[in-house]
Image 1 (cartoon, rainbow, N blue to C red):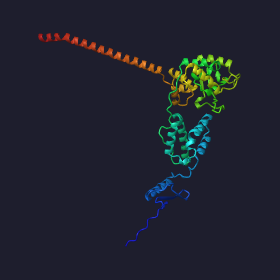
Image 2: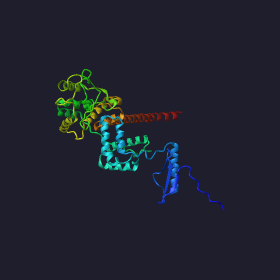
Image 3: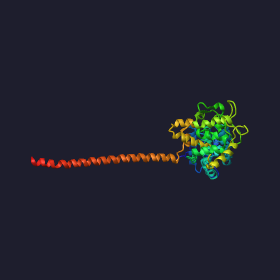
Image 4: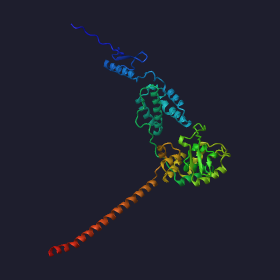
Length: 405
């Protein structure tokens, strides 16, 4: 009788049956220490397959220590922001998104506990609680943090895999007419009138205007230079630094009508000396967003602009007017301080009156082409008629000639 052969011992890892009836897989990590699989299996075959896959991952260098990702997400995300070297406004935005939208649901979890299903559940809950734009910003932040966790070999794959979840589908911003811009400038008063005009017709941002100095203005050439910016955080702290992007440092040529207001403003309101600020408050203090905001909202109401019309939206008026001149996209980007064509196109609105111009031009072109076609048809018909008449006139002569022959 043949002796029963013993099952061949596995050369990598081991499998054993637990008292519960399920199967446990154990394997050596890269240091040679024996580890248990993070889950048990229903069958022995399932456990062996898992061991084979784990061995292959270690051979390829794709294996990640499952304990490496046992890091608190909130602590990891906070450190992530600390290490980025962000601008003051971006740093404030990221910390606010983390505190208000990521921490409540994900803050207590470990990095390796954040799964695709948890991300989907978190996003669905946020969409019920706040606006889609804020959720998109929060999702992009979460995705960036988890991508760094992949690079740090804390997790194997980024759990943020929702297609299009980080894309903002914001409504097109309102745009003011030229009459509304001047109405707003009149309503806000002489001290802040120039700020409205430069915001609209020079496409300057409020933080750029807040740090504009006399030495940055050339009345003879009719230009201003944007070299610095001083955004104001929600805490009220004024942060001096570079403009929003590298393209933000620029020279802006002003329309002639703005220079008249600029000269008057420098004489009446600006601080003295080359370093003097162009815009200061009634008591001589630097521009403050809160003080200006109250005056701006009152003026906006007088003019009848919608409540959601922001100072930033004045840039839309200027950028659209510049585009209507036929300027090249690159020139428009330089004027507005945009580093990408996409950023410029956000502000380059296409209003109904512009669409009317297009439609009118199309109508005229179609009418002209149809008229040309009709005239060609008429001429062709006249030629055909003449040809038939000629044929009829020459036909009897031909018959007569044949008879004579």
